[in-house]
Image (cartoon, rainbow, N blue to C red; front, side):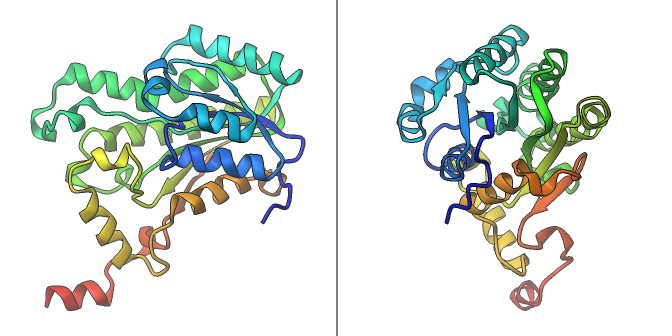
Length: 269
């Protein structure tokens, strides 16, 4: 159901690849809720994915950009402002990649050059993005920036590998830059820690089905779906969350607050 929560609001969505993507679902919700957006991803992801379909469905502008490149980010921001004829109100950073995970390298035997590249894509890109928005004064007052993360930033999930380190760094950036964006720009910066989700990227993590099933059995409300994450993100973009900033917001059916469930105890016994 549409309440037009984002009527008149404009923003940028990073990371939509295919209909399984949380960014894709969020873009659909933004359109349903009356918002307008620029969609962006790397040129190779655009070629490999189905984002052209989403562009048509949401009547959006597509601007290719490598989120690790300050030049690309500045161009993206300038084109977005020119397209809208105004500053922007929301940004979603839904980007993550680990070559070590893709190549099956164990955490105890990482390729550190690959690690640095994954760190740059998954976490440092968030700092580069916010820094570019900050320097260009590109966001309207009471705007909202959201990045997607995972509880492996706080707790040990062995097969999540160096992505856990990337997410921990990402969350720290939200707090650190959130201070300056709040004090000087009246802009919110938050991360959403989502349940394990069977996206195309998520399926690349070894043992993802085990992650998913364990979380489902541990969460009083069950795992949050990508559609539900999109709804939560829309709330964070809306005017109803104006004083929420520098937070890591768990959207996981209660998983993050549970030690163990009776269902798991029974299974072990």
